[in-house]
Image (cartoon, rainbow, N blue to C red):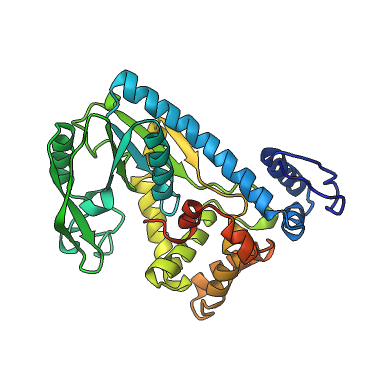
Length: 345
């Protein structure tokens, strides 16, 4: 539980409140025109960030445990054969899969993960967008035939040579990696398009558990904050692209409209097909990435009018939030730090 001292701003004479109550109090203050984020910043300034982080970790784990329990039940009682994990860019698909895999192993189930990214067609085979450029977001950028053959072989108990997509060369390669499912194995297909019903239609839907991963900000609501629906993921992606791809904030902002178009066309329409949703948003994540992302946003040149305006708006959002110290950042579980810095596409 989070304990606030008497120095916390009014009306936060709150003691031993839950994370849900804490976030609700901030939303209530914001909705009434007060500066609710000051309550959050007070928690950080009082050195209570580790308590906030620990409580957030517990809540995430509990929600994942419920999903794990249902997957385990269906595996043993209904013959579940695969888990499909999908979600938009930087929603936390890879990280969530890692958490689930760990929990399922504790239940005696051996997850075997297949990333759909490794089934991308070579760049010269990809479909084109209306502008005649490569459509990186299209569902039909996947080699659906090869994926279907490999999945059927795996479910039949065969050993299968698994591809690896080389992003530098823009082509799929085979490096001797193989995969074979055992009696206690559960196939995981993880990627942007995992919930598309055309992905592997020949496999009975009763054998699939569909999980949609999202990242909806938990406390930063209200027009005053200036936060838009996709900003949580955009800020993550700016942070991720710089750390793992060496991309500038300007480049990420230039790519983002195409990413959103692809999501609206190929990903979000199938979210309703999911058996479960999981929100990976962390109460403290803006504070965790503030220092680095604010610096990257300041580097967006004013001459790039559209991107500069977005960068200014995002900077104003981050300016309202107190940053975590290096010590507090280190308190975040390693798998969750991965969510911020290295999450896949």
